[in-house]
Length: 81
Image (cartoon, rainbow, N blue to C red; front, side, top):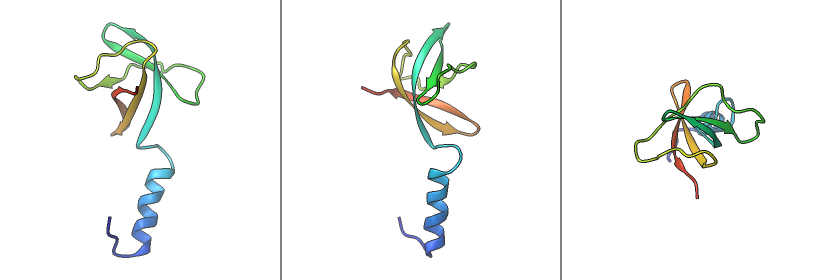
């Protein structure tokens, strides 16, 4: 990417490395109905809310998944193999 000044590059790097991450890894803890509940890497407890996922992925307990930050939540992009 081209930057107009060094400050622009620093601002972009801060977005990637500070606060909420753009992408996170997790494990599908369980699936209730068609909604997966996950446990993020580095955390000991599973989430208390179900997460949405792309139509091309079918959640299965035990799957390692990649999530992308969208608005104020995460969406499961798919299984990591």
